[in-house]
Length: 199
Image (cartoon, rainbow, N blue to C red; front, top):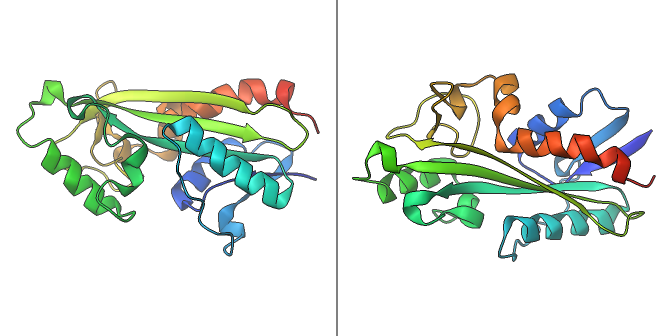
């Protein structure tokens, strides 16, 4: 059976990918299956650069096709921040601290100026392909004044989707995959990867 590795130790991301690739005919592994794999330093200046670094580090270690994602939140009132620093906005990776810092930075900013987007860039690297497959997805919304919802992770409890009248953390995983930045990027990947990949 063919294997693909998703280059993440984030259980939330792992669930989103596994759910989407459920009906495919190969084994999906993540870095949660390889707990000794070292942390990959994200030294890129863009989501695409960081995703490429991760995909190639894992592909070269295991010799298997690897999908890596780098994603984050871009808030217009903060000139695109936290951007590539989304996971470490308040220092170490801590969702509660990141959310608290974001709310603090947006203190006094009126609702209509709290526009934001989640962006996800996926890089699919394969030892038998010369070029990587790179796709991007996004979802637009507003940053709320307080967290709402118990599902999701990261900034999901603050990211309000006006069309649905809910935050990302109030959506079921199926609802989230249907509209999320990662879900949108994965849809593009699904449309292209079979024509691209060399097994």
